[in-house]
Image 1 (spheres, rainbow, N blue to C red):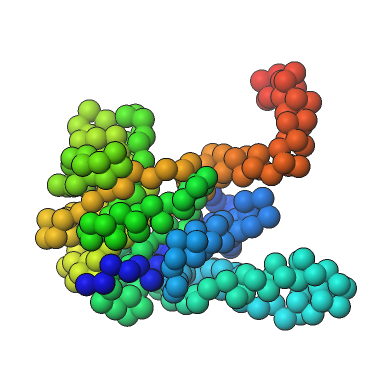
Image 2 (cartoon, rainbow, N blue to C red; image 1 turned 120 degrees about the horizontal axis):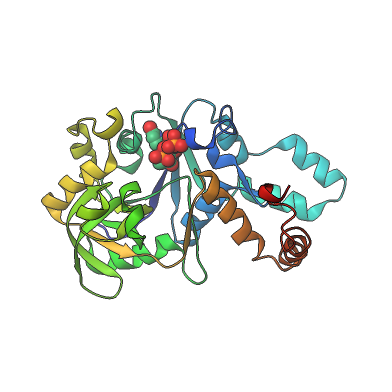
Length: 299
Ligand code: UTP
């Protein structure tokens, strides 16, 4: 089997209940982080990692994702006629960013079910998965590229992991296995949302995967698990038993923007990357927070 990862799947069909009512009629993946929708950061990470073809799994109320990556001729003409060349180029670049395909998951039956909708697109090659609501902010190498480098060396399916506090393990899929280099783990099992007392490790699966195509046969036989949903973790446990599975400890700061606090953290972290916004934010915080007049218990 080829070791080149050319295709990526971005599941973005979830209901986004943790961000309601913002996500009642718009996808959480389109929530802006500074001036870009969250999903654009994910697509850019895939492209920077060498991905050539992208499939975005969408659902009802997700039309704006397709529109975002399409041409908007009216807007392009207005920007051109008004000589707003930098905005014109920016808008044009998004429409021509990559070879992006879309498919609808007709019922929200879980992440495993969403991935199974990609079977025809993927075919017989290993592929990447990037969750549409997990932003991993990196300084040198994109998170997916770190995993692709590992895959090219070892040839085994990979889950991206990061260390979490023991009290938070029950929110994640947790790996069980041996560390073989300073960022590579050989796994013997995955445990979905363990109790902190029983957790096999503190290494949590974050939203990046490289998976062999045999997972599609496994998904067909995977019964609904926790919450009545078809869980990707359940299928990966079987893949681990059948052909082995590794984890890659990812560098970079990860934000779950499907959670209100994660969304706020992502916005602030990206703001301080921009010199002008950082200066304004510092001034704003000094003015409003230092004397605590914005905190509700002082109102
Ligand atoms: P989440 O576990 O965050 O679920 O999905 P959710 O429904 O999106 O959000 P909450 O928990 O109700 O707030 C993890 C990823 O899997 C996708 C989501 O879009 C997200 O990228 N997903 C989940 C699907 O594509 N389809 C599904 O049926 C479920």
